[in-house]
Image (tube, rainbow, N blue to C red; front, side, top):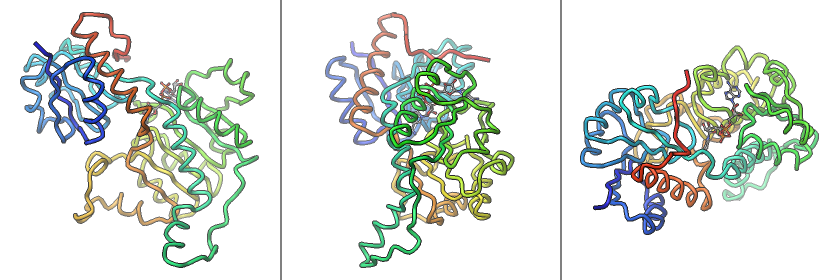
Length: 335
Ligand code: NAD
């Protein structure tokens, strides 16, 4: 009998990769368009495991429901796990697995794409030339070479990003709760305090997880410590930035550019086509009105290589779970 997996937030591109990889495993996959939350958790009833993505809301009530359906495995097909109540899962004996490193290159390269696009106004030039406007007014950029980039979080993605920045000849300042001094020495980069990073960086990029400590790391208080005209890039998680404070910074010109692959209220919009609807999120609407802001729809992970790795690792973890093997990608609660 094939184990039944309820796959939430399933888009056509997820189905293609998961169906192909599943040929090796033979699970019975049921795809659901919506992201898992308390309103639709009933769709998981009858499944043996759920597979979820970044915008699922798996709080203690959802965990309890899953448990009541006999589900003992939540397989996140992403790296971040801030959207799952891990403590509640442990209390109910429900295991949680994730995909810790499907392609740090995918996210680091998207981060660089946002930086270069904002700096050289490629998004505006694309529209301008299509309209027969070949003027360069307003398009002056700066050499990345010799500028200072502050990297917050030097794990897998931060490290790959640092390699890219060094390739451009940038100076790198880094901050991490757990500095990797051997890496810093080998790469010739410097760990500094957050205040030093804020004060000296032309560009700040976020690669730390969303935790109680990092929630709203970028807010009025930190923004005022930054250089005038700073570029902020967030391919981490939306709540690392207090969006209203970011908007204030953009309005006062303290912030010169923002590249956002994630947004704190993205769950209501990202991954879906809302082009026929009236936008009711005034904060998102305001963000989208700035020509020095680029919002992408949490797509930094989205490369062929990453999709393949995500499907392989997820299916492998699910298979290991049902075989009673050790789960090397299990998420455990840390107080
Ligand atoms: P990682 O675990 O390898 O690295 C995270 C680093 O952040 C670690 O070095 C850790 O010590 C550091 N850190 C933890 N708490 C910190 C704090 N309070 N201040 C500063 N640093 C802190 O993770 P990773 O694979 O590099 O991914 C980083 C984050 O990127 C993930 O948590 C996820 O939220 C995000 N992400 C986004 C996408 C996307 O598509 N946009 C895809 C994958 C991951």
